Figure (tube, rainbow, N blue to C red):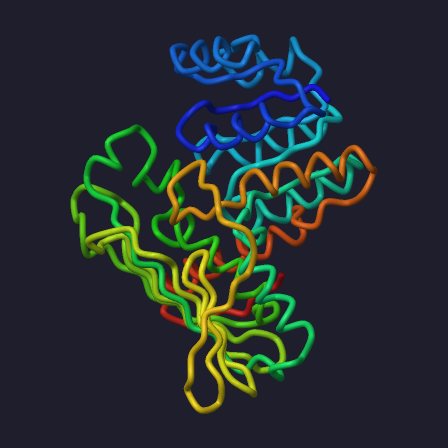
Length: 336
């Protein structure tokens, strides 16, 4: 399968690694508005360089396109590619607003092509183990979930032309860093029905336009309460913690580690799988290659990819609803 990558910045490196290791794909083209980045990626992976998305679409006919651009471009680029009969794998968020999620879903349905959203942490071994325990019912039903994202982003991180801006990043810690955790919370506990959110810029006032602190109280299906706290004002990039309270104990995920806590409070670590190989930062998770390989397996076998605009769009809608709640000061019903 012929593949193109749009956006040759930091996150694209994980896509290039996974694609270069997959014998079923060939990287034929790359595009970036910064010529030096496009040229470097093209030279490394034997592809043709373009300096705009439109130029690539006019001259190439890839089977799939990877979108690794700033957030505000994701939905429009995906819709344009789908309209030309090209499958799309996009970095998160797939969309920045409630309306964009609906537009992307409509574009996917109209095209008959596949859309994939990069929520790679679903592929982590301990996430899969946790999901299996929850679905089995062995520890009873989920009662509540709490999650903490405590990372560090300094002034240098926002020194490019899009991070920290409302126009291009479309938000801060919620839409960029914590959206992966939002996705896992509803993956484990059920779809979000209603939420109340608060956001603030406490760390880099006058430097960024977006939030660096957020809290979201979610009401999930079946009466499950979920609480998220996220910040980029911490001193380090700590492992994300997700704790799931079940009827017969707790499961606690800390990045690639899983602990089971019984009803007496005794904790044991569970070995979930093989040793983890990280291609990027460890706190990102290790699932990018697994997700990308699964996407192409689905294309090859004619199966639907699970985390599409409908399934993957849930987290984007929760984040968009959180911004709406934070702005109004009121609870918001979430129409997923």
